[in-house]
Length: 421
Image (cartoon, rainbow, N blue to C red; front, side, top):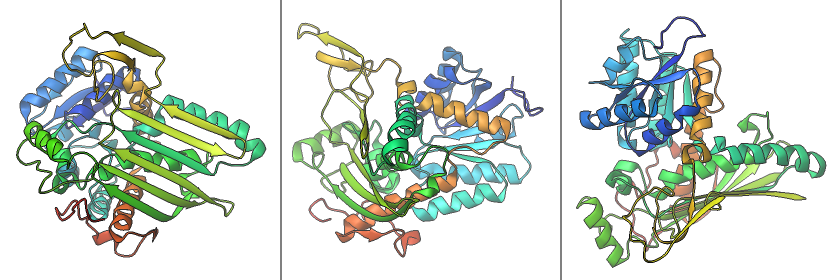
């Protein structure tokens, strides 16, 4: 049992949200030491109870469902919260946490929040200000910068290649799959946009991480210009718009209110030595392949790094005589069950969740500053909004562009059409 006394005590963690993302954290929690998942809150009590049961079954904590966020904050067993709920509930959830802390209902050692931090710069600034006002330690959950292949590859490349031939000058990152699991992701007004807002938060931070010298703060690589492009390549095609509506419900109608299913951004950075270096981020809900593909490259004068999660060491083959049910037992967002298929044996570790959660629990437990805070998450939101603004204007924008605090993408306002920027 976690207690509030002593640095050496185990950290008790509660989850706000119990969906797909929360379950990935729980699956990776076996690699986390000195912390237990003890609580789950979801407005749907049944869903909270199911997630709590999963945590218990995985042996990562005696989790229970809570009736309210306030009740979870008030429980002395809960030392930190992981905020993993839908984007459109983020501000309300943080307000409830802060109100409980301000009212003396409970104390917390830390608050970790999933990506993106918020849907707009205004929202991100508000919740960051709220947690700082009550003195809460805060961490921004970006799993891909903790992926073992990324952290190991970056360390070696900078130690060997950059040390002898000069620092890297180009980083590329992409996250691609066939589309999200839940209806709210597809609704621009709820989610805050389309695939750019949903997934480019990963790639935009990953390229910056790769371009930043190990041991130096990420602020040493400063974004100065952003060029964004968005498009709907697949899900506004009549047959696919019809399928999407049938699968996700009437509120997801891409013949009337589409979101982008493809986005790219070129981010120009000022390096510490005055050079300009580039980060290229791409993301897609229109990718056709075995399943989720995370990829990255880092290039310098005499070296390069390449990462692709679908290039797994394990592959299985099923002939056309194997008639299995559709599932995700081989890879996230799995698209097929026959033929030669890659298998990602431990997705929570491969994608960085295990190392990420280990890092943030240790930081909160020991009172240390984490690698990424909400200030970093706020800047990621600014980059995403700059990319949307660039796409709408059809030109490169200086970073940060004027008026970004009040900017809401046309996709999020329901005013975007794929035949316009």
